[in-house]
Length: 425
Image 1: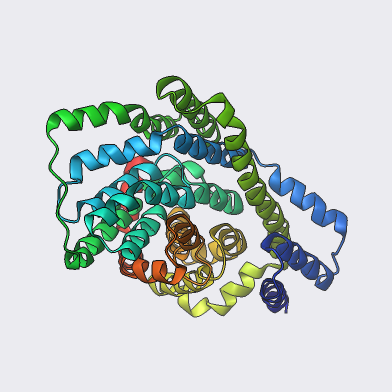
Image 2: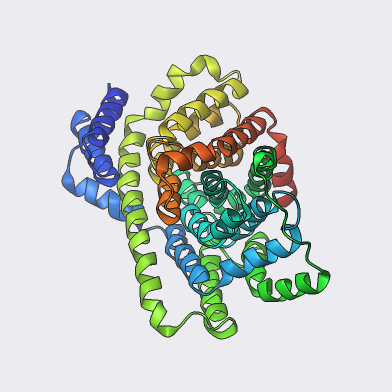
């Protein structure tokens, strides 16, 4: 009964247009009433306790680092670096976009910001070269969703807080799958771009490559500092986020000198607004998670999928299909906060590594960012490029298929994630 109440309350609230955070609070209140535990003070206290988490402090600083990186010219230098090395191959501009997306993903962790930066810089060049506009935007939207998969990733932080897993291990486990997602998008691009009658960019000499490398050196140093510091235990992910923000300020204002003191207010405001949305979602979801734990919804779900527990691969396929379907209707944050606490005990009962499951879950949610009808990254990409949303969705379809194929491979061959993770542990 409690599971049905949870699903119906959440579903009806979302259908009538209640914001996700408030829909989750309504779910908490409904479950509290059903279990005779309703008390407004309990809900408010659980929200405060949920938000009062040191690990969540990494979110505003990583968001701030991403805003500072774009304002300070770091994104443009990364794209110039990628252009110098791979821009000359046939379809090279698309390869440059994904290559740059992988590097940008290791800097900010924001899918929407990375897609917007790529489109603003790359789309004019791709149109001028003769590439199909909608397909080009679809490619860069698909490239942007690599950001939540390669660390530093806000999605992993949210997943870790919701499930009490290690942020560091989730970060390390996401590197190889993120690169695989990029390779999948590149392969799909090289296949579909053959129909475009374009001339490759001229091959750059090593003098130009070294020049672009020098320009991008400070930008390339950020992931080394962040991931190296976390991997070797020098800093926690939260401390690494603070270092990333300070590093981005230093590079933008002192090294590149493109970030002006007058720009800081707007940058901090944008980061604060995004942080407020994420933190409100986290607080509401973690209050709901408390009632989910009291109601033992995980146990109820485990009873429902009991026959699948003996077949971990089949269980994962069913869960991934469910998450993919829900991800087309919900943004990444709510999907993680609602489903992860319920599903993790189920996969642990089946003997599935929780870190491995966390990576698959985040990849699935990332794919949902470019799937209609919600598709936050699709909407951002359409807005930045001026291309109608339905055309962007159609252009992104080949790359969506490629990335779902990568997800299937990761489900069928867990060692693709577990082997690198064991090396890094």
